[in-house]
Amino acid sequence: MTVGQRFALFSAFLMIVVAIGGDALAWGDLGHKVICEIALRQVSAVTRAEIDKLIQTDAEYTSFTDACSWADHPRKRAAEHFLNLARNSQGLTAQDCPGASVCVISAIRKDFALLSSKTTSQADRLVALKFIAHWVGDVHQPLHVSFEDDRGGNRIRIAGKCPSNLHSAWDTCLVHYAVGDNADAAASELLRSITSSQTQAWARASLRDWANESFAISRSHGTHYCALTDGSCQPIHSPLIVDDAYIAANVPVLREQLAKAGVRLAHVLDQALATSSP
Image 1: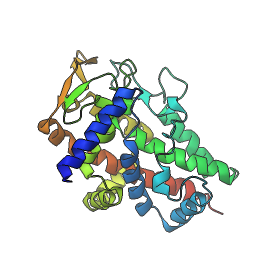
Image 2: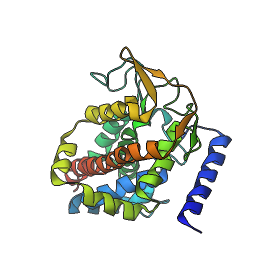
Image 3: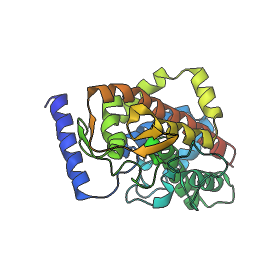
Image 4: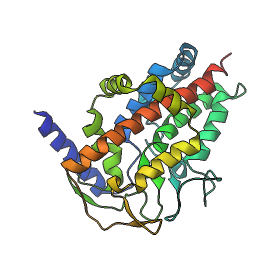
């Protein structure tokens, strides 16, 4: 079977999943694995040992990269996978979760505190590790920092090379176009493209910066998620056509978001685990 035939089969499967119903998940398993593999290769030796020690106690997963999609199977703490902003918002300012009690930003803070605390039980630290790895991935998926009324693009139908909805296209289909279907190879290739200055700059950014970077991509013309009118990002008319031009324009964006998420997750894990180990 050729690469084209395999991708056509994948697209057909994706259409069936969407037809069954339910909102798309963040990045899909492949995206989360790529992010966590990048992070695992960048953390300190002390942090890596702590991660391995925690994963060895997991009854379901034997590797950290596989465990990074745990929060989606089934979806756990559903309200914390995303951040909703107003249509006229210019980005996140003072509040972590405007108009909501929890969101992906508050989830990162909560699980970081649990993971970094020396008084947290090993069982709870394992759960916090899997959650925080997932949350850092989620906040870098641009359509997870977007608008509630269309459920982050889940209600925007698309056609062409990623036949499903816009959110799902960014979760899965575009990821395959961007990095292939092997998480280990994708992480290696992305790591070779990351410069030391990028690593330093990305690690210095705040949680609010992460969210606002994703929101800026959601609002950008190239994403075709919404149309700017007098500073307000209004819904577009479906269906949107995802063609070669759309893929070419957005694959570099998506690759950078995966790389940023991996670098930043490594930094977060070093902060939490290298300082909390016995």
